[in-house]
Image (cartoon, rainbow, N blue to C red; front, side, top):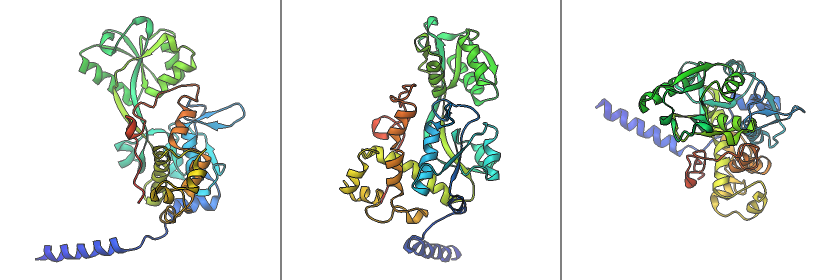
Amino acid sequence: MKMIKWGAAAMALGLVHLAAPAEAAGGKTLETVKARGVLNCTGHDGSYLGFAEVDDKGNWKGMDIDLCKAVATAVFGDPAKLKIVPISWAQRWPSLQSGDVDIIIKASGGTLSRDTELGLQFSMSYYLGTTKVMAHKELNLKSLKDANGGTICIPAGTSQEQQVAAYAQKLGIKLEPVLIEKTEELEQAYFSGRCDLYAQWGPTLAIARIAKSKVEDHVILPDVLAVEPEVMIMRQGDDNWVDIANWTLSTLIFAEQEGITSKNVDEIKAKPTSPQVAKFLGVTPGMGKGLGLSDDWAYNVIKKVGNYGEIFDRDLGKDSPYKMDRELTNLWNNGGVLFPLVID
């Protein structure tokens, strides 16, 4: 009997919730950022090629930097309302918890311990990173199974140690690990020939090979040892800020899916191709109120930063020095895992 009463009450509450109109949002982080007039977002202590690079004039670029610009544009309508805070990997979490940065966009994976032990919250994945292995081409390896008895350089103190060991056991081969902590020393060990193989995050391998101007001398083997979703990271307890991060990412992906670019967005805004696109670009109302943003925030992001494909191409892909393929970090309808949330 009590269960029936509770069920009826819960249903009533549910109906009230469903019938309630959307209210203007605006969490503490959004209020703080607006009051400051600039978004504080993560950079790197040096250059992390392809994701957070700084040139000799102090200008930042890269995929993570462009995502920072997209969030700044969502809030202010202006990608210049952004301060990049250069920090190390270890400084990420205390910088976020102390409020020195408003969001972490720094090639960082969503993990259980970061969620439950550090009190962090994640966006959807903006890049699906894979752990792969590079080999000297002269070894003529077709896959990692051919490398039995070889030496392999691995970044020390990372999950990749376990990934290599588990994958080698699965293949029934033995590898001799060479563990080195600093990336520069690790790459020096591999490229000098100390190691036959080099296990790393896939994009890092591809970029290192190009940066050394030795693309023809090294091959990235087809084995995928593990995958790690790279996410934007926020403090727990501010759902509105997490929503803004997720919808900013979804905006970039939706625009690419619909063929909306920085170059044609004005044309499409003048003549939207669907009611969803009209709402997306702020022609009809409703895109911004629930987030505490303007209704044309998504239009501003695409106009001033570009869609996901434009960002990838200039930072990592065909228009960058690295010429990386999208692989799994592609749209759902092009063989990848990226998809936008639904605009209704």
